[in-house]
Picture (cartoon, rainbow, N blue to C red):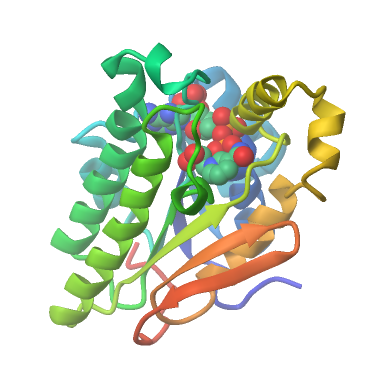
Length: 261
Ligand SMILES: NC(=O)c1ccc[n+]([C@@H]2O[C@H](COP(=O)([O-])OP(=O)(O)OC[C@H]3O[C@@H](n4cnc5c(N)ncnc54)[C@H](OP(=O)(O)O)[C@@H]3O)[C@@H](O)[C@H]2O)c1
């Protein structure tokens, strides 16, 4: 059954060519939303477009570029923005990082959330719009083989909370939510990290995964993010194979899904 709140609405999803972003875009299209899907590699985006059909518009762009957020918000006037683009961290212990490799996730993931959050508040998006940013469970538990990744993802969670406060102070009615998924081998980024942590523990990958319990899938993530998209209020949520767990939630705002476009 399609969601009446999502049918006919317009969403922008970054990182939409694979992994969690693709799964969220697929679920949104299934629910009748129009999705502008952003990633840098046009070939993989074209494959996603072929898979998802007419509801998906591929947009080859760098989501962390300072101008892209403003351009795409102006063009699509989305009622929902999902910030799932993320760069895979180099899997090495702290002292084997250079400053450049340590800080790469800040340059991409954090910068992306900064620009899109800023543009959402400045334009502003229509009341009832939502911005959902991918943080990580690493923001709570650390990630010792990923350089600055855990700190960057913790900052993304803080940024959504700060933006929620600004939205409420200005009476904008824009929701800000962060989602903190557990590590999973089922995406390219997650598979590289799982291989590194398994090697570090002296285990093969199946042994390592068996020690952690069921893995979160992209399909579960797509459904969980749509669940968050149709709720009211701000918040931060851990996401594991067992489902969503609320870490924080803020004042409620009314939902008005249909975009101005
Ligand atoms: N998988 C996990 O275990 C896990 C756990 C916790 C949190 N997360 C977070 O979840 C998010 C999605 O991760 P994933 O596992 O789905 O990763 P993934 O499978 O590697 O997909 C990453 C997506 O982001 C896009 N991307 C990367 N840099 C970009 C940029 N500058 N501009 C536009 N698009 C960009 C990639 O396309 P291009 O390279 O073509 O641009 C791709 O579509 C990330 O923020 C990640 O940190 C993942």
